[in-house]
Image (cartoon, rainbow, N blue to C red; front, side, top):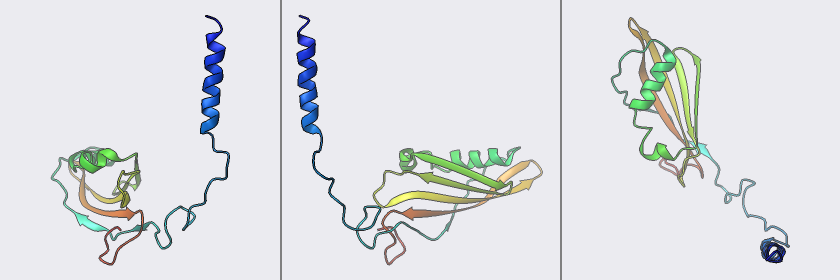
Amino acid sequence: MCWKRPIAGSVLALLLAGCASSGPVPETEGTSAGLPEGWEPAPTAFEAQAVPSLEAMVLPGAAVMEWLAASGWHSGLAVDYAGLEIDQPRPERAEIRLTGLRDDAVEAYEFRLQLEEVEAGWVVRAVERRAICRRGLGDGGLCL
């Protein structure tokens, strides 16, 4: 029974060797990113979004997270994102980026949030969103 292991290992090695590519990798036509000529990532214009009515939060970062949870971006298409980046350079401004979407047209979404300090804490007052299109913009300003 000891002889079965070396034979099985040799057979597996031969099978895997047959899977290896011995020739050169074919070059893709088009741009260096592998996209056809003329297709380049491009952003849409920022558009105002509805802001849900939320309670004021003690910290501005908590207000951003509260908006994100209430906005609906945690379900549907946003379930398929690979990255979430939140940048808050000032307490009254936050930028959110959802990246790695499993969408053939949209590569990412970017949000700009304006916050306001009120007596009870911080609230999100305005939200703008734009899409980063994988293949560029069409004539109507929508992703190709």
